[in-house]
Amino acid sequence: MELSILEKITLIALDDDTGKWVTDSMRLNYALAGGVLLQLTQKKKIELVNNKVKIIDNSPTDNFLINDSIKLIESIKNKKAVNVVYKLARLTRKLKDGIVIDLMAKGILKEQEGKVMWLFPTTHYPMVDSTLENRVKAELIDIVDNNHPVQNEDNLFLLSVLLNCNLEKEVFGLKANKKKIAKRIEELNSDNSIGGATNQALIQMQAAMTMLMISTSTITASSASR
Image (tube, rainbow, N blue to C red; front, side, top):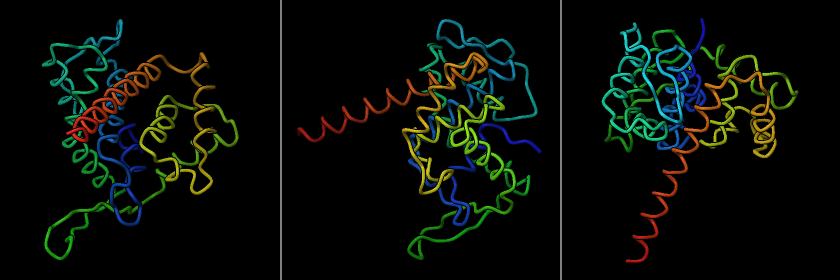
């Protein structure tokens, strides 16, 4: 059984024991949106031409996440890749629910209901079987700590997600070193064996996150000046 890039991001972003999200929701949304772009490119549903998203196959699949993403992209007038990632990030509430449902169906997560302050209902998704997640984490550790080559495009994207979403400790523990991870990503980006789809997805995710940070900073500064 294999995990999609979206499932890998989701598992790393959920605490194994509590089933709670351990990263900022906005950052996670953009990471998942970038993951959607990568997955659609890998499945030959879209291609990136001059930093714009071009749909090359809109035929329905058995994956509703892919179908919904294609429908959304079709409805977007400005198909610049960074804008598409921005729009996809707004879809990720539904995306996260769908990904979690798939992971529960695979027996990896379970649903656990509770209450906050004994009043407000809440739902968490603790781990049931961590075998596949541990395999992914071990691959990422080997790539950074032991300079192992990247076995698939997903791993390079995941390393960038760790940094962008402050999730490096979820994989590397207390010894997590952002500079070391960033240096390894830079080395891998210069490697011609890494697919263009991954690099493009990374670039657009970074651009969208930068746009988000600038927007947030502007709003904060404006509010503070009043």
